[in-house]
Image (cartoon, rainbow, N blue to C red; front, side, top):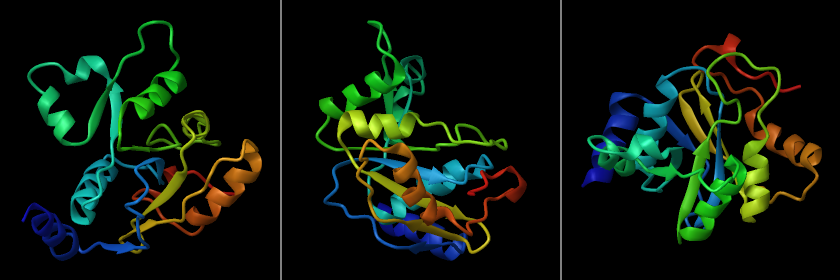
Length: 184
């Protein structure tokens, strides 16, 4: 019932579409969502997640998950990130993959809603360290389509792998196109 409500909101009320398929057999992966140019991206992604029925997670500092909002953030797919013990973010997030049976980490490689000249590469090293594929997802406001791309297994050659990843985002328009990362 809940999925039908999300689908009605996403397709009928908001007028968005879904392109491609997410292979639900992939239980662990890094989901890269681009372009990230607006706060609207978050709720569109949450409603799309509900419409597809695919659980996609996100991480936040563990302090966010305290009372009174912790239950709500977990309901939205959030996972608390504990960086105690000297772990850096990549190691901490890779450890989350090890501790869960299903964990699909959604994040924006841009790292901000402002214009950037290059992507942050943490997503790549998380996938490499956790030995999980990267699934590209494009939020195209120009066409009102959320499109899922084919999974990419990181090879260790970041330049080559990013070139493959970029092909999924060519011609995609963010809510504020001037703020989007420009694929060269």
